[in-house]
Length: 310
Image (cartoon, rainbow, N blue to C red; front, top):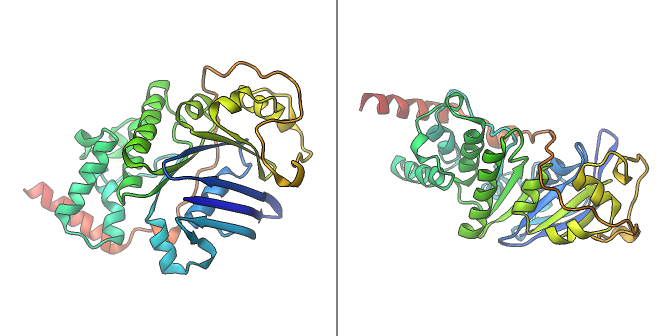
């Protein structure tokens, strides 16, 4: 489903990705860990086609993204759902209108079919009874779920998550984790999750990858990540101040390979039992793909007025 091969990306003179490679299969949930500003969201931007690599190749759904033109790239993005860190809901629209927006913007569907798909998406995230509420009238966890419903409205084959549990209480976080697992089981979609929430990572991941110095330092199952002797992995999952991730010098693995077992023989610590969330930069929507046209706003406003008069 997703193949990133030897990708390098330089931003403002800084090498963010440096020969990074990863793959995600159908029905798999890959969690990407790493310190803030290390390139996790940049990786998501490459998958959705908002960025192109300086070198290397990104292949998603059998398409080499570098070969897609503007129209084909827009078609590609419709096959990928994206949950922004803050939900990215429009405050003046209710949940139903927010979730319907991608269909109104990009698809020529009858109103009845749009509403059917909105109800379906909101039902998947257990918000079918809150369709008429504004974002300001619901909790942060519900806003995240509404954002996820909008990400699912086009029935995507891939869903990307940027900090899905950031800022949520433990119960709301557990609900998001359950929804992510349910979507994998029900729909068989590939999912890539960027998070600092260790409890969430171990609850949802089929595989976990640690991004460090532009490459994947380690990739493995949750059990492999917990038990590896790699000091960088152990430092991150337990939130230790001292360790390889705190050093400025670069620690590339030989020949750019990725492993879950480092050369350090320090025994692993017990697996974390509580989350340790921090913030990471949110992905900015593509202005061309996400801008709201006057046509869409007029149509939404008209439908809202009709609803009031009925």
